[in-house]
Amino acid sequence: MAQRSRITSLSHRSGPVALASIAVLWLAACAPSDSGVTSPPLPGTDVAPSVGLTAAFGEPFPNLTPDQLALFTAGRDEFAAVEAVDEGLGPVFNEASCQTCHLGPGTAVGGTTGRLETRFGRTRSDGTFDPMPEFGGSLIQDRGIGAVSVHGDFTFVGEVVPAEATVKTQRITTQLFGLGLVDAVPDDEFRQLALLEAATSPATAGTPNMVLDIAAKRTRVGRFGWKAQVPTLHQFSGDAYLNEMGITNPEFPNESCPQGDCAALLHNPVPALNDDGSGVQKFTDFMTLLAAPPRGPVSAQTLVGNLVFAGIGCANCHTPVLVSGNSPVAALSGKAFQPFGDFLLHDMGSLGDGIVQGSSTPRQMRTAPLWGVRTRSQLLHDGRATSIEAAILAHDGQGGQARNRFAALSTTARQALLAFLNSL
Image (cartoon, rainbow, N blue to C red; front, side, top):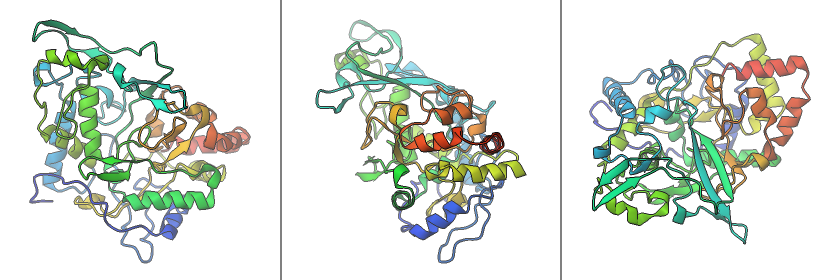
């Protein structure tokens, strides 16, 4: 990449990962270390040991080229920048800067402030989900740019959940650390992981959310967002630019109609395309190159806790190890890494949020990766849990058996498990 001015989209054409290889990596995660999985490559694969994938929170991956570091810095600056109305902010939006939602732990850019956003909809008489676009659904933009004088005086205000909605939920903003590795995982690895789960633990098996990759104009495996409704970091960036800040861009060129009132856009002070794609690319560069979370201290107790984690079924969905495919960023190419999440959809029963996105059902949620979980004070999709223990006990649906096994653990085993999770 030394001679390239842009990070191109990561390749997902490296060929399928053998089902047996995934199984071996999955089971090999019982010896965590600060640098990730350090076992040698599997026979017959070109997977390199995942050395040097972590750094301090908010820092780039180690071993980047000078050009890549420059892209990371430029992307981080854009990520922290506050958008203005004359730059296209709004007319309805949630925040004026990515960093407002994605900050922490401490001052690290790329985490989460715990900002909650609202989605709504209703269940039709035939049982299907209606996102209620005529009311601006399903995502609420809770702020407006205020009074403008464009084609007459008009005041843009934040949206509210309409009285007609029968489904309402909140979602917490997620951490972004290490997502360049997730972006680089081939679709076939997620498909084969779903097959592995179906073969080894059918009661808790996940399914991929098949969604549209706008740039590629084809259906892909989703992996980002609470419903795994977004397939790539580039699309994730463009989606957030529009839906969180109201900044239109090439893949998302149409403004959100405030509360569903598209006529109100006549008063939009910046009706032209707000971003030519350069801002979206900078966001993508930053997230692609943002290092995976560092591990906390590892002890004999955490090693025991890792075994408990697998023994009660947590690892059935919180897959310890994934493997990235080919990437134009050498530091991310062919790496085994430990997100502790399969990025697949699972039926979570009462823990589902009632929203449908892509091929998900109202009860399905993407398995949340657990790396970096020790830094979080609000857990689950709506932030309802304020401790790891509370989050486990709130599991339902396909997570119900693991919850029950956790509740039945001895004090020693429970303490070991919690110590392990608090090392992630």
